[in-house]
Image (cartoon, rainbow, N blue to C red):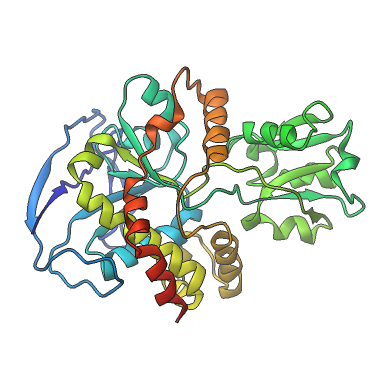
Length: 372
């Protein structure tokens, strides 16, 4: 069987060369290169696989050469999912996932269009205005539809009824318009003030300090950074979450999806397999996460690693379909923050790989196998 494999790109939008995942860990993630922007057309090589592509049932894939998918991300908090995908792809589905860290929003947003990567795994909102400008992109799976944020309040606050006339501390990065949508969903849009607070002022996810000081009555924060707020005497107030196309949703250029459809199907298998591993076989998944992801996340304590793993896994879904509400909310965020203009958000989605696998029984069979 012949697959078409994209050539490895070595330069990013800003003219820096990236060290491949396969290179020694002693190298820096980024090394100097020419300042000239390098734009290359999509190119392919042919390599021969020594056996047929794996069937629907899970199993060990053995091959000396595998087609490559270059997967880009920008936040180390994503690495537990990313490295589970990488391992499931290699072990079971005949795909070599090359993991690329891209630092900087501008470089990350340019990566697909500059042929630096094949797939991105977070922050898809900017693709809507790109599509409105004529870029052809494909979103193909949504493993999480929850923001994964907890509402932190003083201990004497028992419900959102106490929020009237008070201020909500909102982080300036990470899609702040989502909080406006949440206030609307809760009927609080005209009842509360919004105070924008940057990480530069309070530290990464430190907006809880505004609650502790009494300036604000509440803030949303990532579960991964919750312990400091709780240790300071605040608590979590349970509230409904806003459905959105969240972290780990993935996209590629439509040209790649069209020309590498079989490869993308096998890669989608690996994504679903990785999610299943994290949800149904925590011990096995933690063996993967305790290696490179633990180092990249700068975690030294195994218990803290497990806590953060659990915070991620609880947000995942085994059948990675987006919902209409999640797409609509995400599109409104994109419109408010990126100026998405007049475009039908459904035109960017192509779920036929997920549906084919689902209809063929791959996901259900995988669940049965992993529950044994």
